[in-house]
Image (tube, rainbow, N blue to C red; front, side):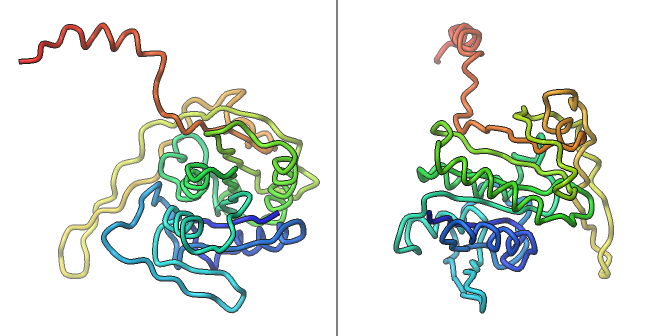
Length: 251
């Protein structure tokens, strides 16, 4: 099996190194990752500047671009052989609920799926992130399972692993995305030259976090696996919207 690894924390991130080490036991690994932390880059592609690559001493390839750039470049031009799968992570911190809309970790997996490859995004859910080996072992189990049976097309698996020793993980739960309250206010400040600057505030606290959600599973010590569907069409409102547009007159 040939696996392409990427992330959004950068090619020097400890989670990526651990993932490469553990998955290297069962597959041929190629790492193509951003040259620096690109958390929150979402699915952005770099279209107005060229992409440059550099090979590190450990064989990892760094790219001066986003996580999506890394996977897109690897699959469409950089690699001589097509990988069998894309695994993104291990992210330092969770990607739960609305986080998936902003996450570069999820975006790298999404790009892999757009390009026709089974893809997983793996995050370590905790404030300090110590047990990367636990998340890497979980990723290994899922990769081995996906090697035998692929998930449905247009689906990626968003995996959040509690930051616990492996012995304390209670199992796996298939979950839906929870929801958060509105984000915390933007933080206003002044730079040394007296100019106003703004920092994006923290994500909002949990709102819908009951049983069945990714929030709940992780809080109870379970690995959360949320299948994300890439078709964003909201089919349930077709009928309502069709009636709505009939009342619009074209001048």
